[in-house]
Structures are given as structure tokens and as C-alpha cells.
Image (cartoon, rainbow, N blue to C red; front, side, top):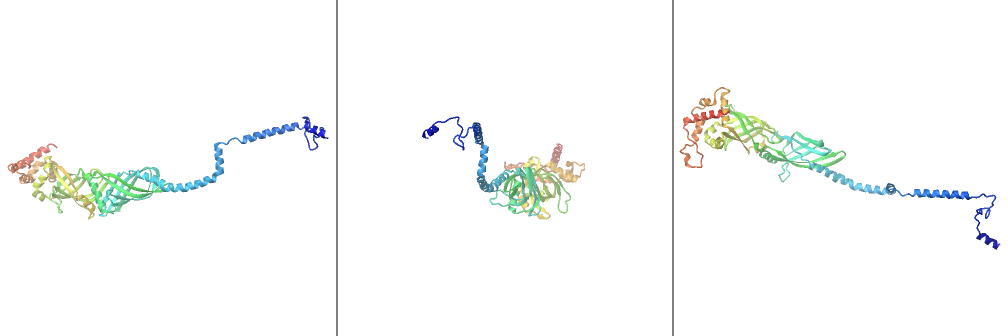
Length: 446
């Protein structure tokens, strides 16, 4: 048995059938060969290995990102909530208001038109036309705008107006129309109106707070603008265009009427009611005229006036008048100045306008020939009588001109000093003749 065991364990026969549960080698007749089946199992194992190799192929970046997000989505959600909790308040409280404020600050808001019209001594009718140019469409709620002088140390608005609610998108015209407002600081208004009269341009400062809506987003913005507006420039170009005597004078003393030019170099229409002006020659008051319902839009404005020329003052102070007009007479003109006397609306004095105009003086020059022609035309009423011939009828030999000649010093008195103006001496009888001759020569030019 020992030799048989050794033989069995040491020798292997390749042709031997595989062991089975029936015995060590099984029965050759009953069990067919399993070689083919073994080969099939090997092929199946190879296919399985290939499938595992294909499933283990490297993932793309997109696939890795998706897998990463699926694994850690809750962390990202928590981070997003924390970010929004920090960013949204900054967005709505800092970024959007800063953008809106920057847009408002960049607006020039030029004043292209408007009006300041006195209504009473305490009220003004105000209109203003300006524009906004917004890169973003937005709605703006009504805004209370305060007008003030930038140069005043303390914020002291003199009037306030309400800017109406509006939708702005691109270049948009903004208008404040016919708002009657109460004067809140008369001193500041007088100061501003004084600058309007004295300078070619004047600054107008406004301040207010606006509520701006951009769709569902809302923000507030502060308006504080100072713009330059063209102004009156001392009424440069003021002139008496025509002046006629009314003889006999009316019951109220009116003895002159005519037209004068009130130029407005600014962008704002000004309304000041009935304006009375003193006519001045130097410091001598020689008359008083009234211009009714003064409303002066931009440009030249011809207005009717009437009033009283103080003829007695002229006669008594003719030497002073001629002396005051020496330079103008050398150029063939008469200079007549005007200062404010009163401004009245419905019988009420408008103090804030009187405070400005009563301290200002404007100058008008008119040709001597034209003035005499207008004056004498008052008597002719279109008759064919010439002006020199009319002098004989109206003035005679004891005339205003003769009185003027009496005030001119003779050749003997003018030699006392070389610093005084010397006038030629005239005989009283020849003065009128020379005047008539001069007027004929002057009129021949026209």
C-alpha cells in the first residue's frame, strides 16, 4: 500500500479525467470530457475583466465637478446663504445708493428758462425749466427743492419749490410751472436779486432729497446743485426810445409819455408790477415816470411809460443840467439817468424789489436832435411846419435855449483858470439863429 500511495502522488497523467464527487478520477465511460466547458469559462472571465476595465475609465472635469457638487451641495448652500446675508445689505444700502448718487451728482441741471414774478410782498410765482440725463430709466417722487445763496455761511433758503414726480430715461426735460411760493427769507432774496441785477451771470443753488425707483429697487439721493444763470447785467442797453410832451398837462400832472427799452440779458422772465423811476441829471431829480405791468422776458423789451417832467426844476437848474451833460453834449446826446422809486402791485409796495432797484442807477443817452424832434412833434401833430420854424412860434426870443445861453460863461470869465471848460460867448439875439441853423444842418443828415 505504501508503494501504491507513493506512485499515486508522484505521477500525474495529463489524460486522466478530472476528479469528481464519485471518486478520485471518476468513471471514464460515464463522464464525458469537460475540456470544452473549461475553455468557455475562461472566455467569460476575460469578458468580465474587459467590462471592469471600461467602467474604471478616468472622469472628465465636468463629471468630477458634478460628483463633487452632489457630494457637498449642502456646504455650498450654507456658504451661499452666508454670502447673500452679507452681500445683499451692502448692495441695497451701499452700492445702489452710491450708483444713484453718482448719477445725480453728474447731472449739470442747466436752467434753460423760467420766471420769477412778484405776486405780493411775500409771495412769488416761480417757474423753472431744466433737464436730467440719466443712463438708467428711473421714476422720481416729487422733491421739495430749497433755493439758497451758496455764499451765505449758514443754509438759509429764500424760497422752495416742488419738483413734480417724473419718469426719466435719457435726456429728459424737467419743469416747475407756475408755483406760487412764500418767501422764507427776504434778506437772502434781496441779496440774490441784487446779484441778478448787477452781474452778467448769477449762481442759483438748490438743495433737496429725492426718492428714486428703478423697477423694484428703491434708493434715496441728495440733490445739492449750484448752476450759473444769465442775468440782467445792469440792464445794459436801457434807453429812452421816444419821449413826447403832453401840453397842457393832465390833471394828475402827467406831461410826458413815450417808450423805453428794458433789456433782459438773462434766461429768466421777471415780473415786477408797476415800476416808477426817477429821472435824474447827476444828483438832480428832474422827473418821475411809471412803467405799467412790467413783465420782461429775455431780450429787448419796448415798454410804454408816462409821467411828469419837472419843467420848473429844469429852468431853475439849467446850468447844472448842462454841466452834468457836458460830455454827452460833445457827442450830440443828452444823458438821462434813472433810479428806482417804487414797485407796486394792486396798490401794495413790493419791498424786496424796491430794496434792489431803489439803490441802482441806469443810464440812457438820446440824441439831442431826436429828443427835440420828439418834443416838438408833440405840438405839430403831423403838421407840415418844420422844427426850425416852430422854434419861432413856440420858443420866441425868451426861450429855454436863451436861458441856457445865459448860464454859459463869456469869453472874459473863462480866462480866470485853465482847468475849467471855456464856452464861446453868444449875443442873446444870435443864439436862437445859430440853434436854428445847427438844427437845419443836423436834420439834413437824416
